[in-house]
Amino acid sequence: MKTTGKVIIAVVAVIVIIAAAVFSSYNGLVGLDEDVNTAYSNIQVQLQRRSDLIPNLVNTVQGYATHEEEVFTAVADARAKLAGAQTVDETIEADGELSSALSRLLAISEAYPQLQANENFLSLQDELAGTENRIGVARKDYNDAAQIYNKKVRSFPTAIFAGMLGFDRKPLYEAQPGSEQAPTVNFN
Image 1 (cartoon, rainbow, N blue to C red):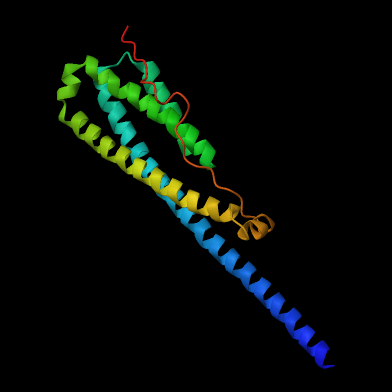
Image 2: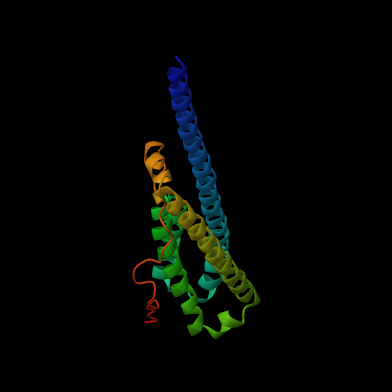
């Protein structure tokens, strides 16, 4: 009877240790998942800030460059796509399209010296530049949080429990293919 009691105590101790490891892993993953979600929300806040600036910028440029309708349409379409993005991947794609369209819009100003001297345009351009910097920082923060989370999800022994508990890798926020190329603007 003495041996049976020791075996039961040993089995219970092993079960308690395994349960503690599972709970610890789960709680750690929940915390890291929330860090990633918060970082993604911060990107969304900055993208919304930029999106709110765009109509004023477009209206200012339209006053000077009325025949650039293709660029204005591209900005509006990309802005709508970003507003409707539901996943990180959709957001990344829509953000890339909007960044490209905004680059073309700002490039138009080079052909209009009066626009470059407009105080409202200059103020909006400065505000947009500051917002772009904030977006860059928010993207980096998201990628840092996602990297920590992804390492944890893929590390032993957490990897054993992560899949069973529904914790999958998070996508990183990467530049769109072709974003290293400057947009082409044709003033004809």
